[in-house]
Amino acid sequence: MLGIANDDTGVDVENASIGDLWDRVTGTQPDPPWWLVALVGLVALGAVAHGPTWRVARNTVTIAHEGGHALVALVTGRKLDGIKLHSDTSGVTVSRGKPHGPGMVFTAMAGYLTPPLLGLLFAALLAGGRITLMLWFSLALLAGMLVMIRNAYGALSVIVTGAVIFGVSWLGGAKVQAGFAYLAAWFLLLAATRPVVELQRMRARHMAPSSDADQLAHLTGVPGLAWVSLFGAVALVALLAGAALLFPDTVSAPEVPRPPGF
Image (cartoon, rainbow, N blue to C red; front, side, top):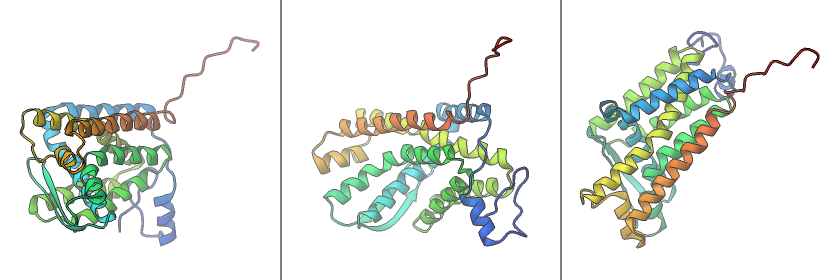
């Protein structure tokens, strides 16, 4: 069972009942200081902008991308055969069903839309003070995805990501958990735009003939560039909305001293 951190230290579950643990998971935690929210936002931006760091961190975006394909495939009634994640941060999700129609369209759409929308969901949870719930929800998603992974590198990527989240939740104090959770939300929101830009660059060089956008163009007759534009627009809107959720409750204007007699 995943541990729950108390206010100052790591986990203490020896004397806690199931009800106590549930209350801690679903309960609210204090908002972190504004400077911590800003700091981890800058760290996330650096991870997206710095090439070597991005090549490693992009694996988490691929996990979200392929997980989105898989989830929507199941929701729309397709049979999911498996997911593969590769060391070059590419991935593939294989599902069976009608090769056309709404189910296939929604499945193809889901990949690039999932990272920004997941980041927005995380931001909404954090805005409500649900830091622990956000971490546990992330672990639940990874656990569900792991059973569908069909290659060693993919399994390693999901396990390592889950282990980091587990470690933070098990050993981290309140500020560590908050900082990590906000970092994850910021990263997904900021990182969602870069793969879209990379996608269009590859399409412009005719290096991605079977990309999600081109598959959608084949399925719907709508040009691939229109789908890329949709992916980018959703990512930007999610970033703006997510930033608005992450900051208002943590940043307050300083009080202006009142003159004597007021």
